[in-house]
Image (cartoon, rainbow, N blue to C red; front, side, top):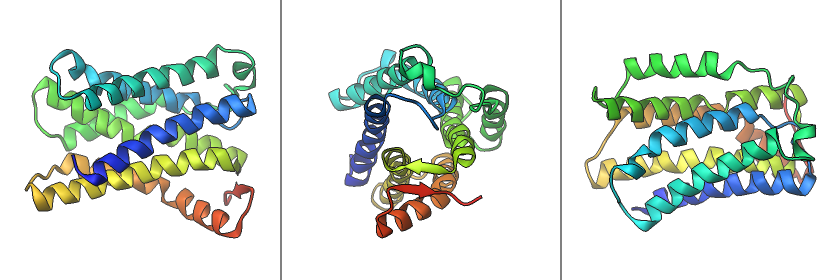
Length: 216
């Protein structure tokens, strides 16, 4: 494992923990998309099926279990646990995630994939699905337009996590000679979806604003 992969993993884990902290501290789910979390759960559940296939390391296993369990916990809070679930805007979180994102990921998998075995197709599908998973949250933020700092830290950490994974792939290409178009293209798409927010995040942090005002 190289430093870029490690930093990416820590940013990813930090983003999830920040989201949990934000929900529990503010005691509400206002402006948050549970549908994005549900897509993430599908991604993790499918991608980490290899937990039952082979053992890589304690670190690898621990991170996979954490991502799955913490995502389930977030969904539980937003959907079922009071008082958090009473503030979840199910009507506003109306992006048809399973109807649009899953078929889109299937199409992208058929266009660019890492192989045609069942496991390779499943793994590729999770890469494309993760790349699209944040769209429901983007739609929610575009409706609210005002993003509080704690939520913005969560989004920024997610965006930076994928950016460091791209650096990880560049590093592996240069050092190990390993290169995967599926990872690069899906990661670039995913990072691209965060660019506008990351720019507004940078400007807001630089100016010391308590919230981020997204453009119309």
